[in-house]
Amino acid sequence: MKLISFAIPCYNSEEYMAHCIETILTAKDQVEIIIINDGSKDNTLKIANEYAKKYPKIIKAIDKENGGHGSGVNKGLECATGLYYKVVDSDDWVSEESLKEILKKIEEFHRQKQSVDMLIANYVYEKDGSTKVVSYQNLPENQIFTWQDTQKFKIGEYLLMHSVFYRTDFLKKTKIKLPEHTFYVDNIFVYYPLPRVKTMYYLNTDFYRYFIGREDQSVNESVMIKRIDQQIRVTKMMIEFGSPLKYKKENPKLCSYELHYLAIMMSICTILLKIENTKESKLKQKKLWQDLKAYDKKLYRKLRYQSLATLTCLPRWIAVPGYHIAQKIYKFN
Image 1 (cartoon, rainbow, N blue to C red):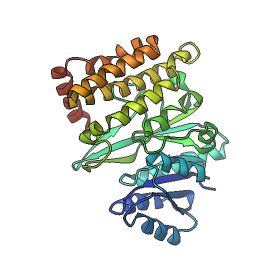
Image 2: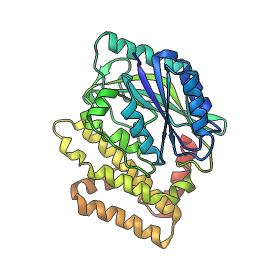
Image 3: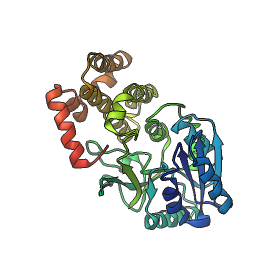
């Protein structure tokens, strides 16, 4: 039995994928590693096949036409047989000690027949030789809990693909399918299943090492500005998934968190358009909020006056410097 299925979507990853794979291999037969070659033009597929040949009981190498990160995540889930499903980007890696803790806990869930939909752990920004741990002090530690047991998330704090493990059979039942040839779909991967999540567990351990620094990285600010239309597309898809306000009575904490998440997404789009500062970007910024208002006036009011969204909608000369100060403090992007 495999406790975790690790999916590693790869595109032209020959320079760094081995480090990612080796850190997960320390778990040996407790995990399966699914390396998905997404139509790479370098030696990615060759490296994946070499690993699969060397570790046939642990590693699967899958070759597919290029479809983007979401396509790789979809393929990994389709092939996953482990109790939990975890995506690790090929330029990132995991803490070997933290992995041991998580495997021990999942084994305990299985042994005690406890059904936990989502397991959460910390992630660490690795940038310019320094680190920044993102933890969740608003979540109960070392116990199974529900949305009602959560506390308010701080500004800029939210659950990312890096911090979340979904139970594989739970995730497959949601029938989630990420769009292909689209960046930033990791937000959809985390967000869409949330209304179905009934039970959670938070391990305060620094598991995922999130590398920031490559110039071509999708979270690089200049790259994000170039791809702002895709950021806007993903944000609109999340909004059109359904208003969190429908959960206000029966699940107020879920409603609050989803509003928080959507406010962050709207704020990211807004601030990037302000940084771009062209005639076209100003029109896009105006249209972004107008489209939300036309789609759902109640949701518009909730998101427009969330603290983070309000800050990013301030005049450019205030909003942009404020964003860059926060960037230095929290070391994101």
